[in-house]
Image (cartoon, rainbow, N blue to C red; front, side, top):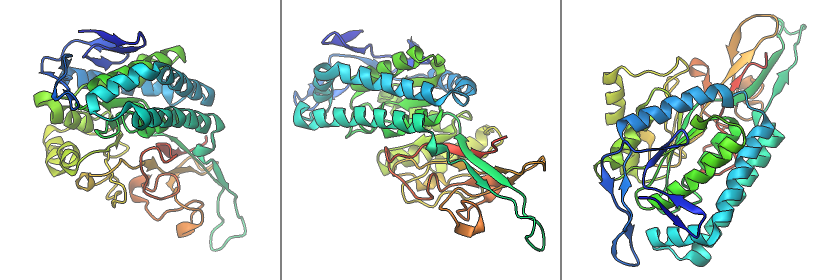
Length: 372
């Protein structure tokens, strides 16, 4: 099945893995159209385990490029996505309204404008570059009992980010919402787990992001979209969260969904499978306002809110040839240049500014690293 609405909205019912339609899914499902009281005519196919693995591996491979991409390249990607989403206009509103039962105007029209604004806002954040928070703590040879060396630090991209689409916000908190925009602005590849309540809308927006990424010169693995529905609705999300390539999760949804994707049961399955990260620390899922950062990894039992930002704090000591842990919270805290008091295994969980956040809050997912 392949369909278009108004000639600009494209969706075919299959997952998008590294810029290409994947036809490996065998579990079929349909969206429910609330206003009509019936299932959609379109048939969608939930991502297979091979789709999930392929998307995550492609994101990990693309990270080698995105982490070194320029501020201008990231800004062009986001601006291209904003232009394409905006161009879909009435066709996208019609599709989203049919799938969710929300009024096209003013409800969804306002959400579409918000989504486009968010993408362009983060393009500006990426281009400006201040989110990296480069800092220099000058040396003090007169300090006693030991001289203080010069310390230099900045935030850097963390790695592939999984984003869960939200059921009640098909545009602003889903495929190209604040979580996706902030991750791309920071140089992190994104794997979106689509919401079964508006699969066509999610896929249509995903194609817009894919096209913008390729036009901006990024590798295809920078963005993937995975359908989730039927008997694979929960499994797709859990598989993405547990994949060793995924470094962070942006989650907006129910407490039950969060626990299924990243709660104690999923944590135990990860341990049993022998899956590990890349040595930086366990991937984490953090609820807004939750207490994350235990032993270098977030407690997945805190799921139930919007995914928080994860940051690695590595501070370079010029001339010393070593790295020392440092904080990245509010300036002056804990006596460090930007300390936040959490230094377990070199990780700081305060994000930018040391506060919990909500999707689209203006923070980028990055990690503090040496400027050398």
